[in-house]
Amino acid sequence: MALQQLNKAAAVINLEDDIKEILSHPQREVQVALPVRMDNGKIKVFIGYRVQHSNARGPYKGGIRYHPNVSLDEVRALAMWMTWKTAVLDLPLGGAKGGIVCDPKSMSQGEIERLTRRYAYAISSIIGPYEDVPAPDVYTGPQHMAWIMDTYSILNGHLEPGVITGKPVEVGGSLGRNESTSRGVAIVVAEAAKKLGIKVKEATVAIQGFGNVGSNAALIMAKEYGMRVVAVSDSKGGIYNKNGLNVDEVLKEKEKSGTVTTYKNAEKISNDDLLTLDVDVLVPAALEQVITEKNADKIKAKIIGEGANGPTTPEADEILYQKGVFVIPDILANSGGVTVSYFEWVQNLQRLQWSLEQVNKMLEERMVKSFNDVYDISKKYKVDMRTAALVLAVSRVAEAIKLRGIWP
Image 1 (tube, rainbow, N blue to C red):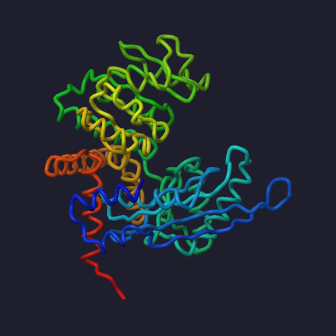
Image 2: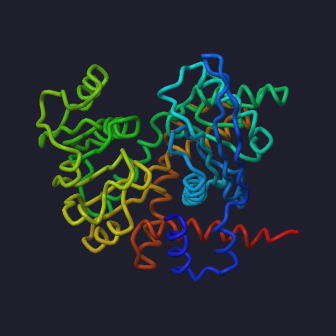
Image 3: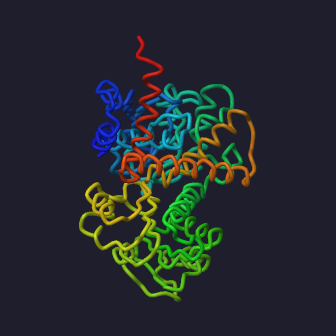
């Protein structure tokens, strides 16, 4: 899918075959075997990966995921997408991704820490504040990042917070990082509404997925933008109230019972039903490939803001574009996270801490500019926003490769 997207963007801008050939391959792939002593005293070997796709525009950047289904092919694709994501936002960074094949849900905190530190040790020679700056991803978070920073710092003999982002604020993390992906989604959805002549205040919103991204997006959209969140869902199902949900109350219910479905002041709906509600804005913030050729023609939302990675299949994209649905692609919509990761990295390099207001203001400026850059390209080439975002990203990376040249 990643290579298909590259080819599509390359065709629009008549990209030279030589540059396309370079961009089709990651610059470096590392596979490591990680022996870890488990709580029962036995040694178990885990397989870990780090794929560095491109550093044409700056140090490699990308998350580390812990999941039983992690594969080299998946990490390759995600590394390429990170290259495009940083380029769309015009960040001076490249793209990379990492992963460990494991089931963190079946492991103790001690086992996860030993695995994390072993992985950090194994890849320590290819990461660094000026080389490759990892971040959290699926089933990793601030604590994992603190362990990696600590391991790297011990190996190098001095504290180096700039080696990784997504850390706890107490050890060099950035204020605003936790809700940055959600805030980015809200910002670009509001910009799209303005372009389409939809009043941002009172625009109706349905959000699939009520994890970190979905719940924070609901709070920001409702409280700061005055949008009416009428439906949310999690893995157990969804809830709908056409007059709007009290997002704070829904969040409390989720924390108490583990699901939104026990919330009283709403009717229960399925995750599939939520996708086809008659709303202004749909935010898929859960799983990938939930909008397919089977349900795309039933979608009534005017704007789709992709909070999750890859929620829309290429076939569905085409149907939605023909229908006139305005899709804000994942590499733009959910790039608030990597943008504030960039801010964290800059703060670390200078040993500074910016205020929350400053971080949010800079995030908004960058997201609005990037949205308009992509929107202008979509109009210029008469293509959908996803193709436009890829065209912008590929153009920027290709230009950097051409200017730097091939040496030796």
